[in-house]
Image (cartoon, rainbow, N blue to C red):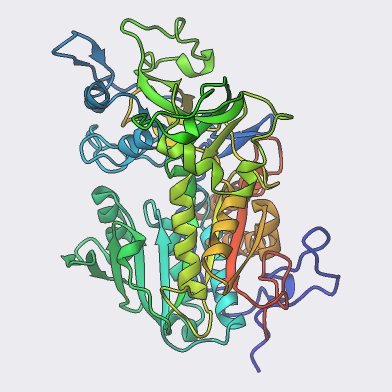
Length: 560
C-alpha cells in the first residue's frame, strides 16, 4: 500500500500556534516527491535583491545589487527645448499639455503598459530584461524552485479537498513573468497523474508580447508554434501536451459553471494602477439657494466647512528642475536624472474623488474630524475588478451562476496585513535601487502596496459562494507547506550525487549547490525587518464551506 502523501502533525492546528506541514520527514521517501528534478537556480554566493522588502514598517523593494551603467536617453522637446529622460516622458508631457494633469492611475498605466516605451510592453532598450541581476528586481520563483513547487502542492491539496474532479480543471496565472512559477508548478503537479490529467487548459494573462515569447519558449519549447485567435495566442505545453492560451486580460478567458479554476497571482496586484487622495478642509461656498443656471455639482457646494477628498494628479516638473529643487531623497537621486513629473493636488473634486473614497466603509471611516486634514489613501479599482473576477469563477455570481462552487485562488504579494489602507506607498525601482517613480518613465518599474482587506472585501461582495483566508506572512505559509523539509530533501540528494561522483570529479560541487539552496530558501522565509518572509503575505480565495475547513498553509490540513 502506498504511504500517505501527507502526515498531519499531532499538535493542535492553529494559524498562531503550530501549523501543520505538507512535507514531513516521514514522507520524504515517498516516490511522489523524490523525482521532482532540480532546475538551475538563480541564487548564488552573491544574492540577488528580492522584489519586496520592508524598512521601518513600510514596504518597498530591495536595491542591494550593484548598478549597471546604462546610457540615458534624452529627447529634446521641439516646442520648449526641454530634454526629457525618455521618449515616453515626452509623450506623456505632450498629452498632459492638452488634457491637464492626469490621475496617478493613468500615469502608472502608461508607464507600465504603453504600446511605445511601456516598461512591460514596449521596451526601448535592446535586450532589456526586467528580471534578475541584469534587470531591475528578482522574484521568489527566480530565487528558488521550491517556491513554485510548494505553490503547486497547494493547488494539489485543494484539488484533493474538493473531490478530485476528473476533468474541467483550469490553471490560470495572472502576471506570469518569465513563466518560471508556472513551469515549477506544472512539473510538480505531474507527480499526481490524476490531477495532471484533469487539467483541460492553461491560461496565462500577459500583456507583454516579449514576455509571452519568453514564457512560450520555457513552457512549450523554442520551436513550438504559436497561433492567434480572437481569444489570444495558442500553443501546446510540454507537460502532457496541454493546450496553453495567452490573453491580454482575464476577461478574455471564458467562465463556465462546470470548470474548476485554480488561479495564481504572484506579485501581480502590486503593479496595478492606483488612485491617490488627500483629505482637505473646504470652506463654506454656498450661502444661498443655487441659481437655476448654476452648473456646479451640488456635492462641491457647501454652506459650512467640510472635509472632502481631493485627488493627487501627475503634472510635469518645472523646466530646469534639479533633485535639490524637487527635494528628491538622496537615496533616490544617485545616477538618475531629476524626475520629469510630480504629484499635485486637485483644486476641485474629480469624478474619482467623489466616488472611490466613498466606495467602502474602510475609506469612509477616515473622513472624520478626529482624523483631520492631510489623511492620504491609495485605492486600486483594478484590484477589485480582478478579485471579483476570481470570486465569480470560483463561487459563481448573478451573471455567471454556478450550482457548485469549486476552484481556488492563491495570492502572494506585499502590503499591510492588519487591514490598514495603504498610503504613500508608490515606489520606483531601477537597476535594483529605489528611485523616484516619476523619473525615467518606461524604464522604471512602478508598484504600490496591495490592499489585502480591499481584495477580500471585493471577492466576498462579488460572490456569496466564496470565503477568504489570510493574509498570513509568507514565512508562515511556506513553513507550513514544508519548505524546510523540502530543502532537506534536495540538499541530501545533492550530497549523495557528490559522493557518487567522488574524487576530484566531485570537487564538493554538491555541497556548494546544497548551500545555495539553503541560502535561497532562507531568503524566502526571512522574518527580519526587510525579509521576504515578513513583508510578503499569502491570501486564499476558496469555495464557501461555512468554516468547516481551512486550506493548507492557512491552518488547515490535507483532506484524506
